[in-house]
Image 1: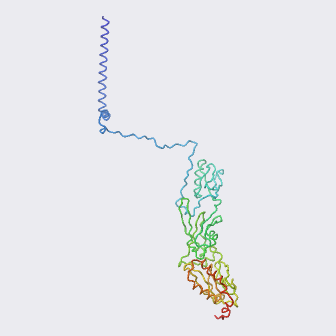
Image 2: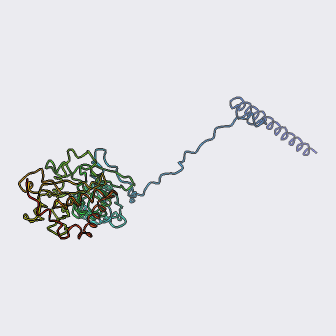
Image 3: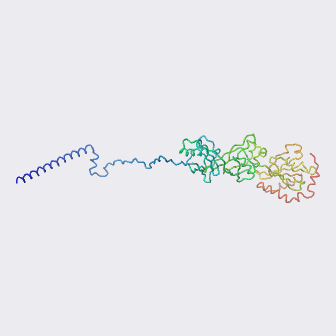
Amino acid sequence: MSQACFRIRQFRAFTLTGLYSVATTASFTALLWAANARFLPEAAIGQTNQPASDRQTLPTVVPTVPVNPVVQPLPNSFPPLSNTFPATPPNARTQFDLYRLGPGDGIAVNVNRFPDLSFTANVNPEGNITAPLLGTISVRGLTLEEVQERLRVGFNRYVIDPMVVVTLGNQRPVQVTILGEVTKPGFYPVAGAQPRISNALLAAGGATNRADLREVQVRRTLIDGTVIEQRVDLFTPIANGGQLPDLRLEDGDAIVIPRLDVGEDKDYDRSLVARSTLAKQQITVRVLSYAGNGIGNINLPNGSTFLDALTAISPNLQNARLKKIALIRFDQEQGKAIAKELNGKKALMGDVSQNVPLQDNDVIIVGRNLVARITYALNTFTQPFRDVLGFLLFFSEISDSASDLFGPGSNDDDNNDDDDD
């Protein structure tokens, strides 16, 4: 009995102790809750069931990890060689003075202090070369300075401060287009280590007597499609005895020789140009005379005069009438034939006014009656000549009817006419 009572008392003691602990813990928890509500009001508000519209949204924290992190290279690896090349310095020469490499060019590369890196290479059809340690490198459209810098950057990954020098070994074949006032316009290969405009003009047969060599135009298409143009004056060096412009041609260049405009030849000496190496080297002159019994052609050096043609004709001084000789020339501006009467006898005596310069496709008519007949035929020919070919065709038709012009007795008047001055 006493033992049971003892257990009951013990149970009550434990129960009271537990209730006291619970009460103490609850009070302490309440105090902590109140403290949180006082010092952390946002958190306390967040525990309440408020409408969504009244809630305050905390700012979103953005991670600081970069989207495209930079991967550091390994200690023994090198970044790839850049495909871009350094820009041309602002004070560099003009684009026409910068030679740009292309397929067929040969270069020599010298690396000071590192002879194993020196090499020679030819640019392949794809525009690439092969360099030691660097492999295949594209050089199409680059200048020698740009190739030099590209190689220096590449070698600098393997050796310390390489000094690279690039020189042009052999230039690729050059083919240019020549248009305008030249003997034979078209496409021409230009030979020589440094192709010049003068070489291109000679390849096309030289400039015509209508060419204006003061305004020669050279057009070049760059690798990006841009077309650049430069005017070259070839006449002034000839007139003043100077040096021709030092402009090196490149493959694909176009040369345009303009025509001399009417009224623009005041300070332009056609005779001087005709005697130069830039003009057509030979001219063809047609001769009509009774002594020759028809039409003949004589070839003279460009720049020849009427007296030169008269000497080449070698007329019979006993039979031919030299006082009245006609020089007929096709005027392209007017589209018709222009006749000028010359006195061959005075020309032989030294009268410079009668010794006029000749041009290609001039026609010389010897004999007074023959001059009258040809002049009459030209005056009655109502249709204008379209070009010099039509002018020459007219005289070819005259040759076909030579029996009427050069028949027996046709030159009697010339032979019997007195030779008074």
